Image (cartoon, rainbow, N blue to C red):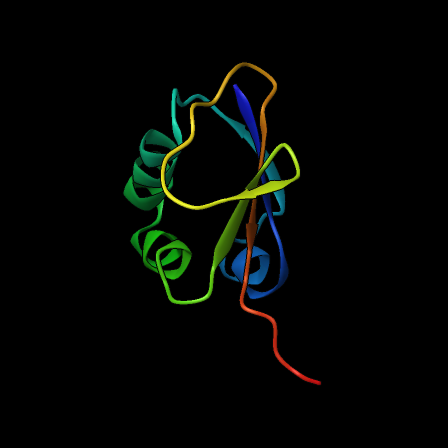
Length: 79
Protein backbone atom coordinates (compact mmCIF):
# COMPACT_ATOMS: atom_id res chain seq x y z
CA UNK A 1 0.00 0.00 0.00
CA UNK A 2 1.20 3.49 -0.82
CA UNK A 3 1.02 6.25 1.74
CA UNK A 4 -0.78 9.17 0.10
CA UNK A 5 -0.32 12.71 1.40
CA UNK A 6 -2.38 15.70 0.32
CA UNK A 7 -1.34 19.26 1.06
CA UNK A 8 -3.04 22.66 1.11
CA UNK A 9 -6.33 23.02 -0.72
CA UNK A 10 -6.17 19.40 -1.88
CA UNK A 11 -6.34 18.15 1.71
CA UNK A 12 -9.10 20.65 2.48
CA UNK A 13 -11.12 19.46 -0.50
CA UNK A 14 -10.66 15.75 0.28
CA UNK A 15 -11.27 16.08 4.00
CA UNK A 16 -8.15 14.05 4.78
CA UNK A 17 -4.39 14.56 4.66
CA UNK A 18 -2.86 11.10 5.00
CA UNK A 19 -4.19 7.70 3.82
CA UNK A 20 -2.95 4.33 2.66
CA UNK A 21 -4.20 3.18 -0.75
CA UNK A 22 -3.41 0.06 -2.76
CA UNK A 23 -2.10 0.88 -6.25
CA UNK A 24 0.66 -0.49 -8.46
CA UNK A 25 1.49 2.76 -10.20
CA UNK A 26 0.68 6.45 -10.20
CA UNK A 27 -2.03 6.13 -12.86
CA UNK A 28 -3.84 3.46 -10.86
CA UNK A 29 -3.57 5.61 -7.73
CA UNK A 30 -5.04 8.64 -9.49
CA UNK A 31 -7.85 6.47 -10.90
CA UNK A 32 -8.65 5.04 -7.46
CA UNK A 33 -8.78 8.51 -5.91
CA UNK A 34 -10.96 9.85 -8.76
CA UNK A 35 -13.34 6.89 -8.46
CA UNK A 36 -13.79 7.64 -4.76
CA UNK A 37 -14.14 11.40 -5.23
CA UNK A 38 -14.56 12.80 -8.75
CA UNK A 39 -13.93 16.38 -7.62
CA UNK A 40 -10.66 15.38 -5.96
CA UNK A 41 -9.64 13.45 -9.07
CA UNK A 42 -10.25 16.55 -11.16
CA UNK A 43 -8.29 18.72 -8.72
CA UNK A 44 -5.33 16.31 -8.73
CA UNK A 45 -5.24 16.48 -12.54
CA UNK A 46 -5.43 20.27 -12.51
CA UNK A 47 -2.75 22.67 -13.72
CA UNK A 48 0.19 23.21 -11.41
CA UNK A 49 -0.41 20.17 -9.18
CA UNK A 50 2.89 18.38 -8.66
CA UNK A 51 3.53 14.84 -7.45
CA UNK A 52 6.44 13.67 -5.33
CA UNK A 53 7.19 9.96 -4.99
CA UNK A 54 9.40 9.24 -2.00
CA UNK A 55 10.20 12.97 -1.82
CA UNK A 56 11.32 13.25 -5.46
CA UNK A 57 9.20 15.26 -7.89
CA UNK A 58 8.04 13.14 -10.81
CA UNK A 59 6.37 13.90 -14.11
CA UNK A 60 4.44 11.19 -15.84
CA UNK A 61 4.28 7.62 -14.60
CA UNK A 62 5.94 5.98 -11.61
CA UNK A 63 5.73 2.48 -10.15
CA UNK A 64 4.58 2.27 -6.54
CA UNK A 65 5.93 -0.37 -4.16
CA UNK A 66 4.66 -1.22 -0.69
CA UNK A 67 5.45 1.68 1.61
CA UNK A 68 5.98 4.21 -1.18
CA UNK A 69 5.07 7.76 -0.15
CA UNK A 70 3.15 9.79 -2.74
CA UNK A 71 2.54 13.48 -2.05
CA UNK A 72 0.24 15.68 -4.12
CA UNK A 73 1.29 19.33 -3.94
CA UNK A 74 -1.03 22.14 -4.99
CA UNK A 75 0.24 25.07 -7.04
CA UNK A 76 2.21 27.59 -5.01
CA UNK A 77 1.26 31.24 -5.05
CA UNK A 78 2.50 34.41 -3.49
CA UNK A 79 5.84 36.09 -3.60
